[in-house]
Image 1 (cartoon, rainbow, N blue to C red):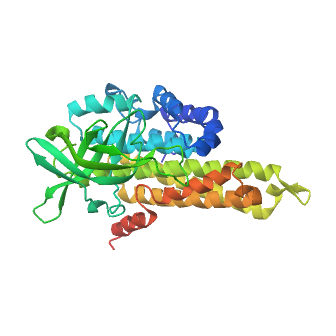
Image 2 (tube, rainbow, N blue to C red):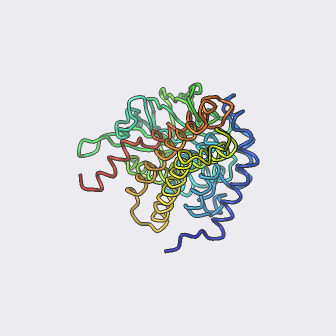
Image 3 (spheres, helix red, strand yellow):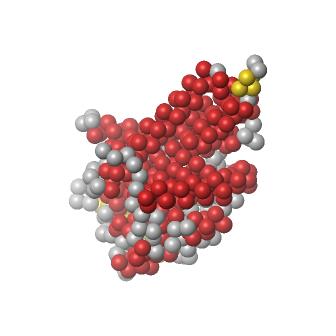
Length: 382
């Protein structure tokens, strides 16, 4: 059993760590305050090949393995989670469906500009009344004369409304299966499609510089060939997409937890009480030690899930475990980082205030903690 990283993984980790430290972290406070989407940082990530890491070079990607991609997400998120989620949602949710399920023509048309970072893409699964119940999709698409007529809405969709977003892939009910269940199909909707409207950005507690919007479809018409894969395969497809996405979110959570530890440790060494640094007090040391221990465990969990994925072995259970534990680890780390800062942790000029506001959504996006526990319990035979 070898826990070491290969040369390519190390190179990608170091490149992302350097970029996050020099380019992203110094901008994080400003991005949180203004909520402006960081187009220049996204462009630079594209130039570095970070927006197409797990895709083959023939489609404009970097040809890296899945673990290297997750490590990159961890390092970028350590700099700022708004940038980290922009990268993760674009790659895991926006571009990956084209690579996994798209035709050769769709890969050439859509995946190549996404993998090179020229464009962003979104994935529309969540609806106002279909969140954890992902099979409860109400958006409908009716096939008439070789065209899909789409009506419905989506909520909380990342990367849907930027100037460089080219479109969204949505789940829609396209009929009824023989067993009476909904037939769900994934449909490609380019940004300029008539009847497709993109709402205003949400006002969020955290991840403020990421683009998150509601979408609406009113007799939105796309050609019949705009389905991804086969008709009726939508549910199976997005469950597969979410498994890999959960591993990436686990990596994102580890990056944020590390940022919390970085700030807490630095502050504890500088802050003096009773004539000496608070890092010399056992109560503070225990908090820091617990943070470090849980971060290491969370990283090992997402490493294992990523490794299983790369081996082509089942990993749904491990993906849910990694996502659940890492997101809750990040929450505990943010809470303890604020506690170590004391009253200063409540002030927005300290990064831990931003981390505390941003961490909560890690337990919600791409499957809530409750859903992850349901998945794990299912694998236990419950």
